[in-house]
Length: 205
Image 1 (tube, rainbow, N blue to C red):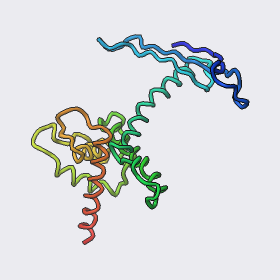
Image 2 (cartoon, rainbow, N blue to C red; image 1 turned 180 degrees about the vertical axis):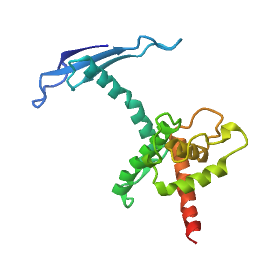
Image 3 (tube, rainbow, N blue to C red; image 1 turned 30 degrees about the vertical axis):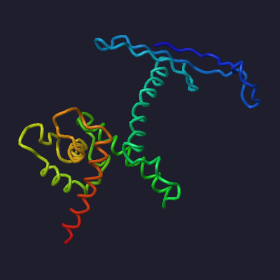
């Protein structure tokens, strides 16, 4: 990894804009992977940033921020056509602002379920759900358990990983192939909320 302060000049083939400086100081961070997996070309990034970069730790922080772009792309995929299809919602839909505010919340929740599905972070259930949701999650989990080891919820009750397994199974993941992504988690979260509503009604009757 290496970094430096550089200066960008206005393009020669563009008209001069009064509010834009002719020269703009900026920082560049170059990062190259030194030990890539076998058969995979090494990652090689040249990143331009307005953040001050004058140390290795500051340069490393810039690369960590850039890595997060993949999470952001997955979030956009979840709230757009593959998930909520938010781009096709008319601005005349009522209440439009509330819908646009709630959509990212649900999208982030599905991303949290993806990140917590393996249980390595040992995240609590409350990251996405309320404690009052736990009985319904446990009841649904029990109904989804199959005869093989891969069809059993391997995570402790009360953990986010336990809830993620439930949502993944409700979203169509069988437990055998690959890992559940954010769209599958979102579908499962939809299903769980519908089941939870009925569960709550049955408990109150």
